[in-house]
Length: 278
Length: 163
Image 1: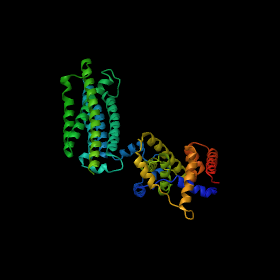
Image 2: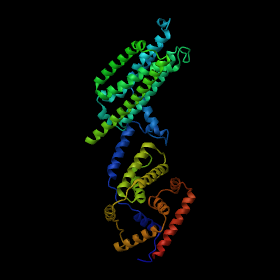
Image 3: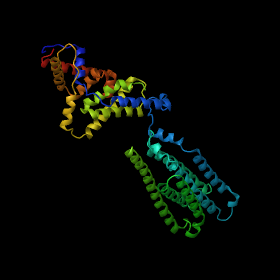
Image 4: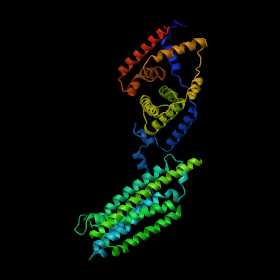
């Protein structure tokens, strides 16, 4: 054997043996799954948009988040648009003329904020309401990602709407003389955050259609409260009241964030339980 | 998808196994490589697809190597026992075993980078340009290094008594 000479091809073959790996055990199963997935992607056109843009991420975070806009119910967008139209109508209404007109407009708009919050809550609990959570767990993207993406989109939309509310609430003059933007913002943000906080708590506690009814009832109660309570507790224009309003808004903001984290966490736990029992 | 996963699966797996010497881990990383590629990239040319696949696999192997705990000796001996290779027709089993041991011994005298180059070029048959892109080298640098590695391998074999 010693003294044997190898041609290049033979040496290449010996290298092939020298670098050989043990036989893979899950190859066929994996390739079958890949083929099935490619078929599904082709059927739903997931590759089609990428053909025009080679090397572009197929389903990166921005693409995924943007794709979720299409899955938010049209009714939610219409409802938001209607709430904004109501706010504009309220501000331009001849009945709102006279002494204290600006305050009346402001509280009217603040009373609409809970309804705006309802759009987020209704969408966040949609999977639970229609008892589709289990099915959605089995989809390509996790329910947690979907919920987070939709909450993010609607949160952003509500932020824009609230900014517009502040503008409309100041009668188109956000830096007017009577009170600042901060006071106007607090008047609108407090009922909004209160509705979000309570709504998310309800969505976590109750299941199905029951949660929607409770949320709707709660939002109406908050709206009515906005009209009646500030007269008794004092407007945030006064400095002493402003601190209380700011503190309450801050606490409700923290509470809402906590409720959001728990809500998303419970979605993940549900997923874990389902996979555990599968 | 421009490249065929069936065609590339074994090659990527061999590359991962070369890096990690752990069958289970190499197979996990091979599958993860394909999933990541399909999730994030869509390359028109096979060469570009190969570059993506080998780059992803290389990075995943580095991550796995850092995380990995020591492998028990029993698991290693089980794998080595299963690693019996097919024999070529014509030569006796003894001759083939001696040849392979000689090639392995000669390969041990090369650096990891040289071994990786030989694996990519001669075993996985990756084009020079693509190897250059994977390793961040020019085509000519890759060619020179492969020629040097082959020369070194042949020299080591000569020392073992092979021509």
